[in-house]
Image (cartoon, rainbow, N blue to C red; front, side):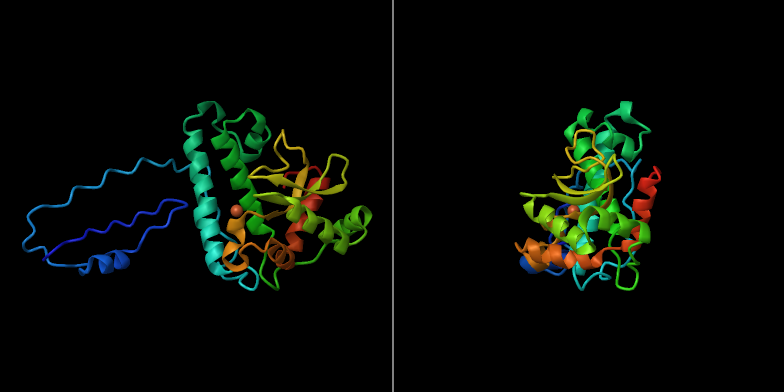
Length: 262
Ligand SMILES: [Fe+2]
């Protein structure tokens, strides 16, 4: 028996496909089997629908996938970044291609009118913003910086201590039923507030009950931790706190209280 396999690797966000090697093994044929007796070429695969390339792009991680492996394994980081976040960027661009009235709006401008958006744009815009921030407020050991004096003063004022903030943040992460995010935001009165949002919502959305400028946020979807922690969200939440890039969180705080974009 001779058989030719034309393998076209196809990667769609959120979906894993069997490798060519596994496929060949299952069929008990070599990948490059002779085609000397083959008379019929396999039908060409239907062309994939065009995926809009913009206006939004998946940002590169500011560190290697294994840089946080003491807390989050490299496979989780790669799947989370490439597949989950990548799918949200693709989904957002695809949905916006059918919404010309929203052309040219920034991500923050979209979020500020989330109550008017169709679900595909709302959810993917939220996911893109949330994950883009999430990557930057974690850092490898030695690159996490320090809590700035201004931020420490605000934490002491509003939570008593850094441990007080951690305890409230932990409670918000644990009390979020199902999937969502936990946050520290600067509210309209300048005070720090801890809370959480469901799904891919965030505190920049005009219809979010938790509203303000996020300076710190943690992903508590299971895809963020399941490979290592399985159902033990508390273990992930506690370990995640050690990854916080306090230099970046301090920068975001000072930009928020100055009224600037973060
Ligand atoms: Fe996520």
